[in-house]
Image (tube, rainbow, N blue to C red; front, side):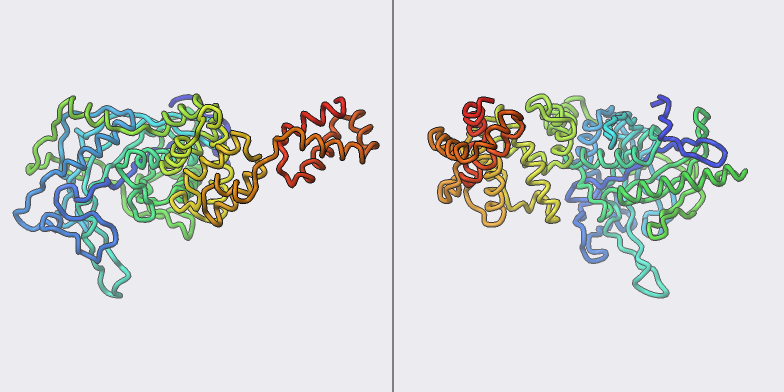
Length: 494
């Protein structure tokens, strides 16, 4: 990732160009029914302190026991990131005091994480791709939550999240724009959802990012970085990074220095503010947790988990492009969400001729269905048109039973009323007319009634479109357009 940055990625300052350098630490809550070291529920939304065991509350004498499902989820995620899986890893105590961390330390991983280096390919709006290195993925406990708005004089503590398993995914400082950082979080969220290892729900705090930002003159060594803590929306990630880079440039251009610190982003004001001076690793006094043995597993264990992985978005996108001739953009739209890709795959499975109608199916799913869902503010899970109904409509078009125009009318009926598309076509007389004799009679009548238009079309063939329109109008839109065109060309001598 040391390629020169395009001029458009550089920031214009008062004294010249600057380049931002960005690394992300992404905290993803592991999909599991129980916490990392206890049997307490991880369900969201319980009443305060209702999902807390004696282990989570750090009662004396309580010992942590590793949840194997959380380990499996971390390994699956590492495999999805094309990363090194470390067959031996160690849990450490990271010592710091927070009121919502009752142990007085967090069980995390430091020098020996469960997952090592990997990489993720991101796609940008201009069609470019970039590869971002992954430094590591480790497992750790989440803290609880402090509630400051329940009392004017007291802070309440809810420990329901305390001990919930988190995967911390640490990127390398490979990104040079806020757009790249947003693309990385978006891509990671998609991969996690495909794998089923995290639901990616940023509103619930199940996926959040710490953004490390510094600036430098192009080609110079890295500058001092500041960390923006716990940003929980992709839009805010972009805004926070851009603001912080501008803030640092302003200080440096005024002759100041950047203090290494942890900051918070205030979306209401659109700015970052200082939270505390940034701790280094030695400040946390890491040491191996004496209550937990090193985590070890065999090559066979990893291989078995790898064999169960689903097809991931990059592979699915490549298959859609090669199998159906889709554009990279259309394939990317279809694979962006696991549910969308599954809807398309189910639609394909219902087609009589996938090779003939696969691309047509993609066009209809993206343009008609996704377009309508966006317009109505609905998601794919609540679509009034099922994949089976979609496949039936596309089959009818592919077989020439209905035209594209009739299909749009049929789609509208299915969307609003439901029903079997094939039965609806029969009941409502929606089949397109392919009887050449019937179409020829209509063409002959229109030609006979419009000799002046015939001469104009023979002089300028583009004017044949007027005749096509008249024939379609006369047939109530049911004449097969291709048959109409062929007959008109023959009759008009074009």
